[in-house]
Length: 115
Length: 113
Image 1 (cartoon, rainbow over the protein chains, first blue to last red):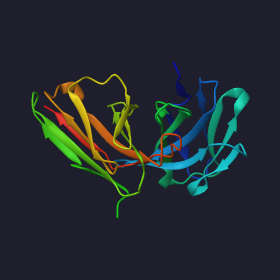
Image 2 (cartoon, chains in turn brown, red; image 1 turned 90 degrees about the vertical axis):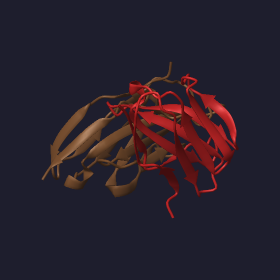
Image 3 (cartoon, each protein chain N blue to C red; image 1 turned 90 degrees about the horizontal axis):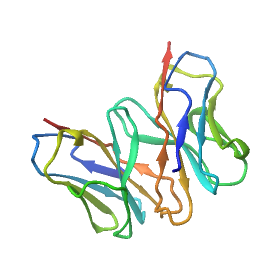
C-alpha cells in the first residue's frame, strides 16, 4: 500500500535556524506532492505543491521543497525560521489517474520555534 | 467569503446520538472530500465526491453517510455515534479529481461523551 513517511515527529528550533523536514513516499508511479501547514487550532493551508517541471518548488512564507524522484523524497526547507512558523507540517501525496483525488498524508511533524 | 466552510465548528454529543456536519464550497470546484484527523493528528480520507457522485469510500463504517445535494455541498451524517468517532473532521474541495490541490475547511471538532 502507498505510504508517506515523515522523518521527524517533533522538531525544536531557535529563531533564525534553518529547517529541513524530510518526506518520503512509497509509490513508484506518477504523483503530485504537497506540503500543508496547520497552525494551532486552524485548518490546513497549502504551503507548496509539485505537479511537474522544475523539481525545486517555492511556496509561501519563504518555504521551498525539492522533489528527488530517485529517492522518492520531497523535503521541505526554509533557510531561517520565525516564531510564527510554529505549526504542524504535513507532507501529502496523490497518485494521479483514477484515484479520486485522494491525498495520502504523512503522520505530520510538529515544529516548535523558540524566540 | 470563506472558500470552504463547515458547520458547526464544535460538536459535543452523547454516544448513540445522530449528528450532521455541513460543508459548502464557493470555489466552483467539482470534487469534495471528507477527511478525519485523529487525536494524533493523523489525517485520513473518508470520502470523495465528484459532481455529486461518490468516487471514494475508504472503508468507513456504514454509520457514516455522506450526501451531496449539489456539487457545492457535501454533508456528513453520522448515526449511532461512538466514543471512537471523536476527532476533527475536515471538508475539502479541489478543482477535479486529478488537480488535487485541495482547499480545506476550518474543521469540525466532534467530541462524543
